Image (tube, rainbow, N blue to C red):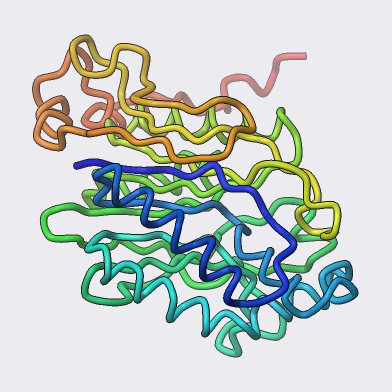
Amino acid sequence: MKCAAAAYPLDPLTRFADFEAKISAWVAEAADGGAQIAIFPEYGAMELAHLAGPSVASDLEGSLRAVSDIWPEADALFARLAGQYGLTLLAPSAPIFDPNHGARPVNRAHLYGPDGPIGHQDKQIMTRFEREIWHVQTGGPLQVFNLGDLRVGVLICYDAEFPLLARALIEAGVDLLLVPSCTDSGAGYWRVRVGAMARALEGQVAVLQSPTIGRAAWSPAVDDNHGAAAIYGPAEAGFCDTGVFAQGQMNEAGWVIADINLNRLRDLRENGTVLTRRDWGESVMRIAPLSHLKDLP
């Protein structure tokens, strides 16, 4: 399966037609590269706030609500493009005010297939900025998306740094983890990258990381963005020696595309040099209780 991850810059767009043209060109490029599944980054939808005007885009609360309000139009666009190009798309995540989840927004990424919308994944654990300043809240639980014989899970940015979230998806049979990200420093990018690579190693799965990149000084939410798109896998001789199938340059816009042999990936779980997916339970059982340490200084 050919997979594509975007390193995506945010632009101060003024009309929805501009957003439509930009996204359409990006999806067409991924499709031209042979991608069967393509993902956009966390909070990539924040550029939609500028459609409501610079004053709204520069106001944190106003920008969150503006993106949520216009999302139905973006939703229809991504559904149409997935059908037009016959691929699976993870749209850039957006703050969504969903009355089913209270008065504050969730951070939600929508997934689309050739036959229409598939579902959505809400971020599970908020960063300090989201929790303390944006007041973004946790939405619905983790989901497993069945795409034919492929099972896919989504871990939005910070979620990829928590192995037990990934483990729940892996035990549900996931082959592919999608990690859209948005980080305002090199350190933040590397935290997510290291987490994504660790999840690939532990679960013997493929992981796609898609970051926002570049400056967006017009937005207090996503003003500075650092990262590189990449596709990771378990480090295995003859399959993916370094654990990196493909990676882009730091802060360079564009798609990174890799062809992943899913049958070979699944075979590694039974016949690989190491069997980290199978042996996870043994590691849990061997954690010694800490009671014997209580008398240490």
